[in-house]
Image (cartoon, helix red, strand yellow):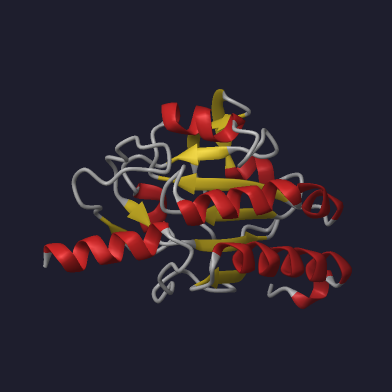
Length: 199
């Protein structure tokens, strides 16, 4: 069982990920949340409700900052940030990392690069509201910096939430770079054809 748990944790934090079997789907109402978040190393209070007043929001859940797959995903979102903005969408990353870890991650020029905020869901409450599986990691598991992670992992899943609070698309079970690319294609499609989203 220990080996199985370690394998599951490694799959979650690598580029493979696990499919979002029970996650909320297109047409579902996205749970609103307010959480402590970090942008470019500075903590603040993030509100999904407030963000939705400005346009669609890409809410992406990821296992842990400073792990291989999540590093790739954060970098891909940062590189493509201007394209998301051009499509009228903002980005918020959500993980079970502490705000201290996220202060480092959000400012790291190799990953988030100060381009978008990341929110701390330390107890996994937000992830569970989105019906995501939260998996405990094995003790002593370390990140790419050699620092012990010390928290559970939410499965890698991205939700495109429209201004009316409805989920337009759920993206799961993909490698990190493909997850970002599919999210970008979705918001660009909705920007061109708003009627394509469900009421």
